[in-house]
Image (cartoon, rainbow, N blue to C red; front, side, top):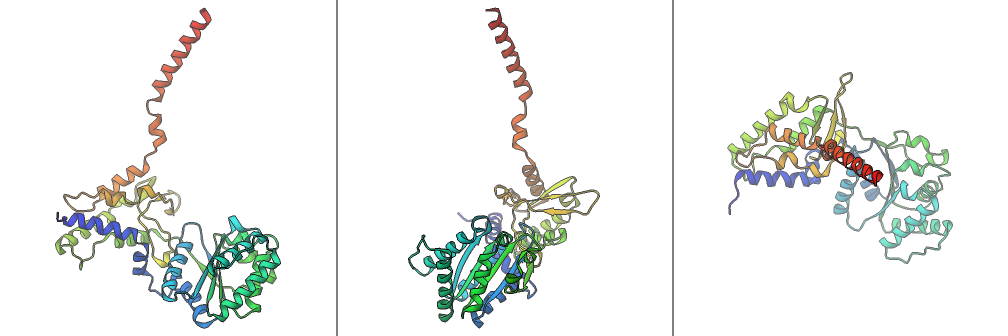
Length: 356
């Protein structure tokens, strides 16, 4: 059965929202984007056989990890069999011995070697140094990703010192990437570690309201050169433009549920159609706070009327109402009457027991 233009548009929008890399590729060509800067830092280690280090700093939910994953995905495609990826998380591996053992374990898995659980800190250090040397001779770059980097900067920082010192003492190709929500993460480093760590920092900032509106409209607009009828695409985009320019859509006090999420930095222009709670304070400017709700990711798009085939302001309002529902309060409706009945029954039973 042949699909209608509205059904084709719905499929197109859903597939576009699921393809984060496709959305990102539209707006990542700028040389000023964090995507381009991070890709250049890592790729230079691969092509120029050198060591690098960089910190990705910014509040939670602004896209540090997402951008890094997209960069690594592109580099794995461009340089197959030339990158080894080692991932650590400060919440799990903040202990130096545990972290060094985890690095050794991942390197053994990557290169199909036997891993010894009984190896000491010094044994693992020597193993990592030898692997850095061997990978350097083979022109293979090892990328160390340290999530929650500020947790690694606590205590004696033996892991960071050993890792950075090994990178300087042998012929290696390695990149250390620290991810932290603390903007002063580099100031937590000891002098001996800071001297070995580069001062490169990429700052990820939340986007403004205007950028959110512009990019959401860009993501939801239908392309004019697609298989969809040209008149239908033009009408759909015109209705969408009207919906986004409606003051009732983005300025409903005291809170608005905008179906936009920004797992990427403002300069990278990346937005998923998840949900973000947007709180408006009458005494201050509007502040955007990310609150991703995966269950309601496609509410506005999925509620599109297939008869008209247009995404109108009513679809967004319906999504807002659905997102603002509080199931626990719904469960409490009518509880007063039920409580009264139970209380009366308990009193009656207590009187009967007393009389008996």
